[in-house]
Image (cartoon, rainbow, N blue to C red; front, side, top):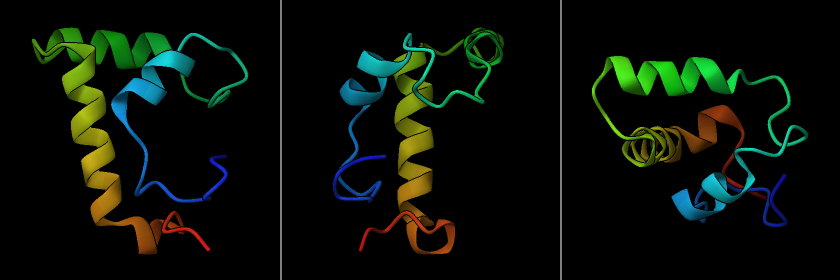
Length: 67
């Protein structure tokens, strides 16, 4: 979890840096994300960006707005 406990300051660069680390989002199947991006004919950065933006819009409901 981020020190701020918020997704509002999360950047694609941060997710990409940790994406290959097994302990980061351990329950996430990276192959599914990668294959999904390919199926959508989108690069991974764009998929991550749109996902983060969507989660930011719903941060309060997701409990990710911080303290």
